[in-house]
Each structure stands twice: as C-alpha cells, then as structure tokens.
Length: 260
Image (cartoon, rainbow, N blue to C red; front, side, top):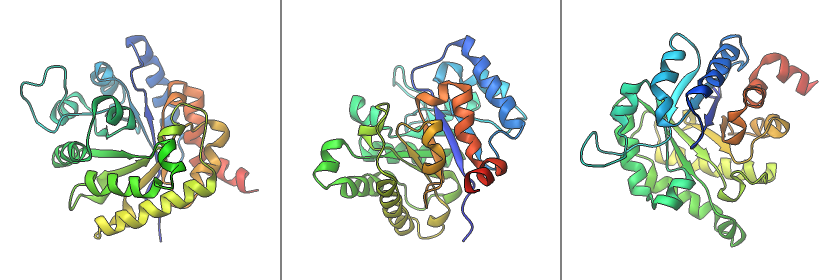
C-alpha cells in the first residue's frame, strides 16, 4: 500500500522576531532546491510572523501554519486567534492540542475537536497532538491515554488528506529523551489502528507524525519506522541546518546512502 506524502513540520513555539524571517527565507530556498526530497515541509511560526512569512513563501513549496486557534470564527475572546484569521493571514495548517497547551491552558479533548472542526471546515489542515506523560507510561497507561485523546479530539468524518496526528510523548518534548524505536513503532501501530476505526473512509491516508527530541542524529531511524509519516519538530526547527537535515532524510540520495 502506498504511503501518504511525508510531512516535516517545524513548531517554533514562542520564538521568532522579524529578523528571524531570514531563517524562513533560508528554509524556503533549501526546500525549493530539493532539500526536503519528497516530503512536504511546513513551518509554524508565532502568530506575529504569519503574514510576513506567508508572503515570503508565495509560489514556494514551503508551507506556513499556526500554532493554535479558537473554535469560534470571531467574538469577545481577547488575545485569541480564530482559524479564519490564520487562513486570512496565509496559514494553511494549524497545530492543535499540543501538550504544552493542554497542560498550561487546560485544553480538553472536546476543545481540540471543536477547533479542528473549525479549521477543517475552512479548508485548512489540522495537526492534532496526542501523547502521554512519563507517569502515565510507567503506569502502563500510554495507549489508553492516547486512545482517549484520539477518540475525543478527532472530528467525525474528516477529510483524511487534511487530518494529521502528531504523537509526542510529553516526557520527550525538549528533554533530549526519546522512546525506543520499538516503543515508537508500537504506539504508531496502535494510533493507525485507532484512526482507521475512527476514520473508516481513508484512515490509512491520515499522516502520523512523531515528535519529541527529534534531531539530525536520530531523524533517519525515527522516520524509517512503519506508520511514521514525518515529524513535528520543536527546537531543531529553529536552526536551518538542523531542520533541513531532518527534512533531508526524504531525499533519494540520503535514503540510498542510508540503506547502502
């Protein structure tokens, strides 16, 4: 069975000033020169940079996304951004339910689902994040936690080509720790089964990303795992060389060298 096109997405989090648009220009040029191989490449900068970033990538293969949104289109929600605003600014993707937002802002599965519906209804692509804490994994509850997040966060009858699931074990984000390849494979196999059940028409086409301390040194082995269709990259996406080294695992010459 043919796999969906890989996606390598950079989550800049609360990092980036106007001067850092030069980094996006550099990634754009590298992507358009074939640096991402067969992968789709995305950068999600802070909301303050989306308009300028989207202008920089017009006509490019590089895509721009947002880091969160409200489910409402507009209203009395001081400081928030709607999916409609993100789209108007030039974003084509939005990250939803990242563990940092679930923890810091109490975002529930229901809230994530409502936001995903809003983004998908507008023709955007939604990256829904799931993942367990260290305590939950040590208690043997990793799959039950992730399964519950999927059940509550994934909208009914989504367009599978615009739904992305990112598995990020909370304890691996920004810590330098990663699960074993066997653990990643097992979780992605579990997620694929759940998604095929939740999205019976096209669940095999939903892209599953791995995130959590992905670096150039471990990217190739992580991205080669079955049902890992790319990565959601945090800190390494802030460095052009590191980010393109990760995206570069999908270049044919790199894949050939790795398998030689």
